[in-house]
Length: 176
Image (tube, rainbow, N blue to C red; front, side, top):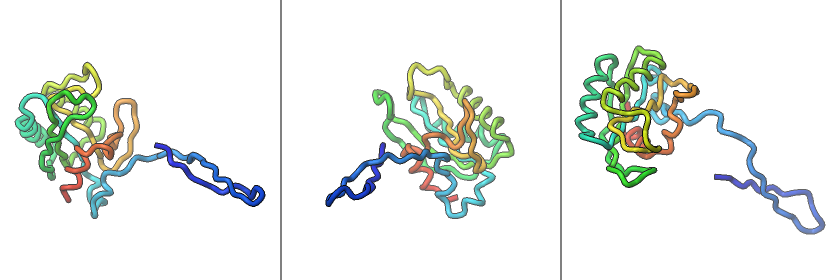
């Protein structure tokens, strides 16, 4: 999306001419998911996870995930589960999505590895046939201890969290 900024050039006789200029800036930092809460400073020790699934028994998968997650972390809160239509390739089952608030002692690499391990344990195959393909479990790290990280395989906060209603609606529903 390109915004047009109109500026008046110097006088040209009796008339003004409008010129359009494209803005010359880039977004350096993505929006902070913690800022949507009043006491966001207290949430700096928490991780925010977006979970989703559309293959198999999704609700049972979520409850089993919660039980597994509690072994290494403390689940502070979780949103209600949202059922929404798939985006991207739309000829697939509806997705179930929720947001988890977790208190963890793990660092971001260990936490990311733990989430990837849980995805594999529930049958997620990282080599998917196409983008937005059906999956048994998807765990996105929306925020991690209020840090901004950019690596090849790990970006915190998640690069598209603010564009997805499946994350924004459950995120705003819960006030931790």
